[in-house]
Length: 102
Image (tube, rainbow, N blue to C red; front, side, top):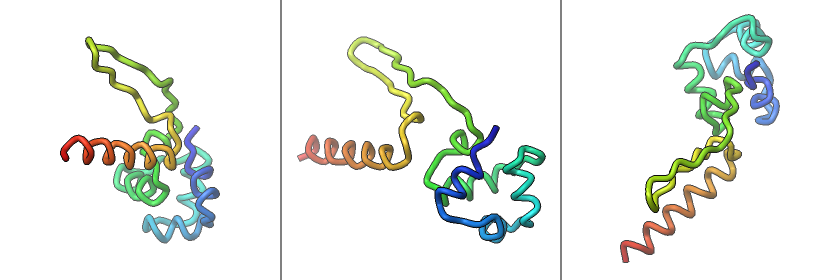
């Protein structure tokens, strides 16, 4: 089941507001939230940008964080982080890169 309603409610939006934002009807938004309809990619992109999440988050894809090691290098799947923590991580990475380049 998708999480569109969860993100919409968390953003304090009404279905009619999301409909206006995505150029859809309120009944279409209701269909997305109930799983009777599926939004197209452009609409998913608009919602993900608005809610500060990924399209996978909106669609309810849950994937356990994984670590793949290659010698000393590790690649982490950060999709399990909340949007707020992803922003924090990005800020921290920028800080590290800036300090490294001095």
